[in-house]
Amino acid sequence: MTDLRLPLAPDLPEEQWALFLDIDGTLLEHAAHPDAVFVGDELRQLLGNIERRLDGALAFITGRSVSAVDRLFHPLKLRVAGLYGLEHRLTADGQVDTADAPADIAALADEIEAELGGRKVYVERKGPVLAIHTRAAPQLLARATQLVEQALTQLPPGYRVIAGNAGVELMPLEAVKGAAIRRFMEIQPFAARWPVFLGDDTSDENGFEAINEANGISIRVKPRGPTVANYALDDVTEAIAWLEANFGAARVS
Ligand SMILES: O=P(O)(O)OC[C@H]1O[C@H](O[C@H]2O[C@H](CO)[C@@H](O)[C@H](O)[C@H]2O)[C@H](O)[C@@H](O)[C@@H]1O
Image 1 (cartoon, rainbow, N blue to C red):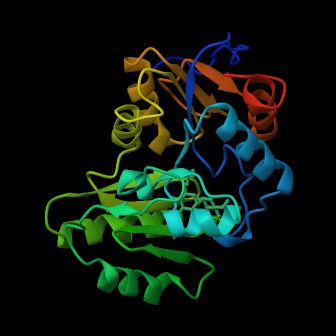
Image 2: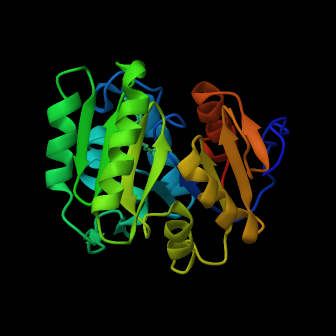
């Protein structure tokens, strides 16, 4: 991992780009609850314009489920890797392919919710992925992490725990953003383009690795810790301004 003092993302030259975007903390400011984020019409319009200008080579790469993404950005529908790549929608209007879950984690979610649910902790059930959000109760992050790590010991092999942004998530090992990006890069309209990925979180690091391997442009928004990304942008506002400047109305891919 490289130093935190990364150069700011530069203006990109005219090229055939493929753009991959994390959502929370990159395109959207964080909110107290996952459903409380704000998606403005300007952002919807910008993303729609970019999608057209890149001939469709734009995909969300997110920890949210595809259905949650569609609800947030409605009526805009884009290509998506949801649940860290356990779900894929390879065309904007296509079907959602979902990987099999190694185990049913609903009972574990019930147990964690029974202890923490009434204490401002939100247990987000995403099928094979479980997110415990402690943004509204930061003093319970350590306990939430402990409970999820205990849950891991009750599951068959094939799961891992990662730190979320103000929370912790339990997910299958196959849930990795790098694999999701590589999958898109094998198909049209992404193949043979130069990949760009903007993300802000630990779970985005492996996406940056996939981008770096392909000699693409990896950008960490608001870097707070070690990162393998090549460039940085200060915050969500700067990320959107950079997207507008490089892929928005004034530019053609
Ligand atoms: O991969 P991402 O698109 O960045 O999604 C990561 C997780 O984002 C959401 O949780 C985070 O954002 C919430 C809204 O700001 C915030 O309340 C929470 O504390 C954050 O962890 C989403 O709810 C998760 O499912 C995603 O995995």
